[in-house]
Image (cartoon, rainbow, N blue to C red):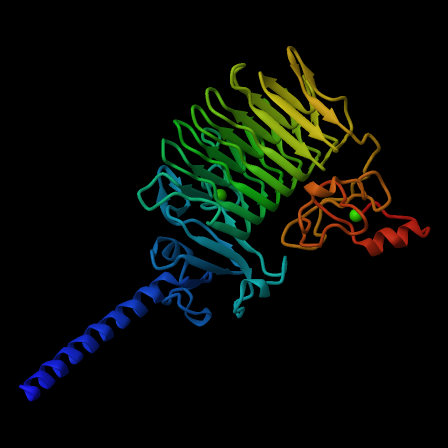
Length: 434
Ligand SMILES: [Ca+2]
Ligand SMILES: [Ca+2]
């Protein structure tokens, strides 16, 4: 009996060990799958994508469910897959994608900002023609069963350019959060949106219609030379019975143009909510052929849109017919502690709030590479934008990655000037505008 018990015990122990072993194997496999699997992409990539020496192509990586983080080497990438009616890059599941790599980095932080641009270009077909370009360079779909797109999904370190359409929205990015339960609210960081065109929202369309949500978090990015043949030269929020309330922080809007209304933004929120927020944003040289050099807003009296602009620069924006800043139906809005070169907007039956407005010229420099991933305009180092930001609203760094504040308080707009520049100029040097 003793012997048999011992044998039974041994068998039992063996079984336990076997179960334990199987459990551990399954545990490690699951654990490995739960980790970020990085996929590496280059222009000519045709490998397995598991290293910089075996890169794959961008369309393959985006469609491979094992790629939940994608690193993209410097280069120009053209969409080659049909999505809907046009060629686009498609993101239809939660993932993060980073550009700006030379191609030997082992961490995202090793990227050298601005040195190795990764460009997503809509200029397919004849390079001298825009009519045949992609209608949306990037299509982000937060309406599928693959999962909603939240700010955990990051698009970081790209130039998105040359999307073109005269009859659809979102030439650069179409962000689809249409329908109840859908969410398209990624984090867009270190992006240059250049020269995109659409009917509405030249660079970006935030589709939060039909009870859905599209409220991207846009940081450290620039929108320049984007146009709308209708409205919203840079971007267009649509929130009919849904939500489209993006947040822009450390962002530059330069020389965007709408042929009808809203050189920068159109926000439509009939029976929904579109209440965008702008913190440390530079709006410079945007225009509308008709109304609202910056914003065109359409909402209802019972549910007005409400925009907020804080610690920002609003300068040299124009509209041909009506107010150089805002045209609206039933919206509300606030400009707080912001440099503005025109009268606070008023409209029939509507009062905007302009609090602690700075009316002296910030004397902006030229639009160019001033460091960082994106192009910017520097404020004059001894003019009105310097050192007057509300500290509580100040991000940790500026659009270029410069630590904020330099000096006692932040500078208005997207860029913080180096304290050394401020000190030098305060000591009597003549500052140059560029
Ligand atoms: Ca073309
Ligand atoms: Ca400062």
